[in-house]
Image (cartoon, rainbow, N blue to C red; front, side, top):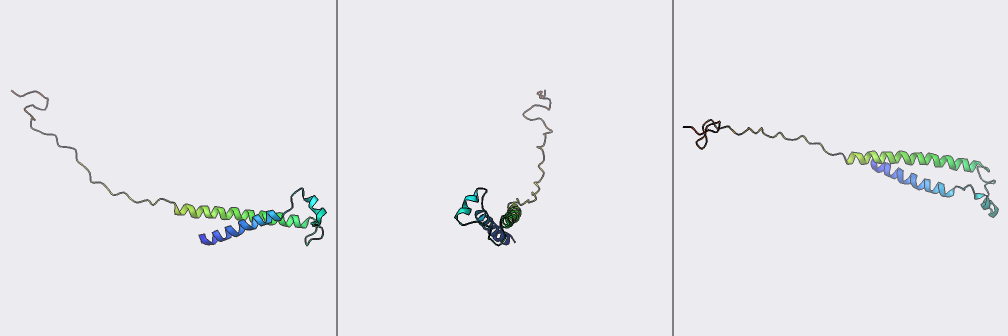
Length: 112
């Protein structure tokens, strides 16, 4: 599935680049003097601009959606694997000696 999204993403990206390069800018009126006027085109004088603008908007939306899809697939790969921790055996506290140590009782006094 991810491979299919990659292919669609690349095709849409290259189509957006192509459509943007084919569109006339706001200062393209000077280009009409050299024979590139669009009044005789298939879509009419302003139909070409509307079609190209709408096609670019649709492809930009598809590019955004495929980018989100690729981000989702990337996040699935980078999820940390959660392993349950093994329980450590309980350690007991050291035993307190009941008998005097080194000749002293529990209070620290030397027995007589």
